[in-house]
Figure (tube, rainbow, N blue to C red):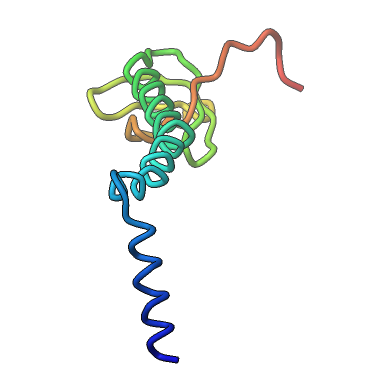
Length: 111
């Protein structure tokens, strides 16, 4: 009985090995990497690049939203910090990296 199982195991290995057997084993891994690159890595890099570009293009008077959800208007700029007016005569300083988005100009007064 042991001899039969041993013989079956040897035959299975011999049948699995062929010309290029090592490369064909890596094809699914390569395919998975390509899929992950196009579905996860590349879009994240694109989003990060757009965010960096938006942060460098900020200017005085822009309306922004911080990553904490605070809305305000930029009143001063520095290399690494922004001065943001969040209410009348209430100004805070924050790091440029904490800006989540720039808000487009509003068409009318809010109610």
